[in-house]
Length: 488
Image (cartoon, rainbow, N blue to C red; front, side, top):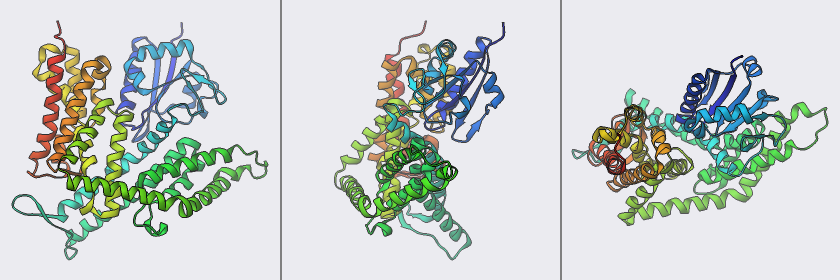
């Protein structure tokens, strides 16, 4: 009997942990069954282990463990099963067997592949499109944030107690001029980040013809001078622009154009019409009201933080708990994008001195708590972890120490009743402590290493950040240790 040939693609919303963990699970499960299996990953660094057209044609079935829209044209006519990346991680064996038994040929829109209709936006599609935009935005956020952090090291002068007493660059020296230019480069990244996000949200909705209009519209919506406003519309404006453009382009693509002009429709006609439309709408209708709304929101957050001592702690606790709740899922990503949006939007409006750091600091303080908490629990409560779990806990440490919260997912999937409350509690403690103690996260790694790699302003240099994060880690570890059953 000929071995079954299986090919697949994995791609999570962030393009970091789930993508590769799902691919590894599928490959391992397929090899255990003796199948010939190859999985392509579409992560944050691009396509790896790419499938050839010949491999796709020879395959018995195609498994798509994806959480973003991908190019489906190469799978036309093949039997396809589509699941979430997390499902492939949890039950790769079951996914493979389901694919071999129940996968249906991919063809026109509406074809079912598992529980998902291919080529159509299902319920929850709104968040799927947002996550697609975030996956492209994250590398720019990280790169720009780290460059700003490098420049900030030279810009901030401190007194003997470690408090910032002055901020600025000495352009009279070569080093000072270099740091000033690097700071400008980081600001360019944050300026382009919002249009990039909008472009790929629109791309997720309607494909490549929507990218140009969404990027231009989002840029205009965040250019205070063009709008005649005090500030731009921030992420809210970018989301609104992206969806308006996306669904407009969808409608434009359905028009039965004469064959003579069909070749120029996607590269000229649709981008021109959609860009004109969104530009007029933003400049004359939506731009100012959204800009005013975002200004009020951020001013309100700033007033709360400055006038109520408990406000940063409460915000930090809530944001931290969201980060620990679903480990890279929608709630986690909502907290992440909110923190990033508040930071970048307030930097744009008020400058680095007036930026609101609270939500971003909370997300970064909490992001490594769950995986590091698992690892610490396996060290303190050795008799409650099997040999296999200890190996997984060491892997979780490797991911947690570089700020990847997804390292705790195997444990959450195995025992959610005990693990998730522990993750939420520890993450909330870390977020609340970091913000309550006045820590400001500018850029770097969201783990204890962040105090050395990146730039974090803290009352006691190096110590405050490690104390905040590790207290959350300890809380998670203790809750796990006291609630987890002993292994025989």
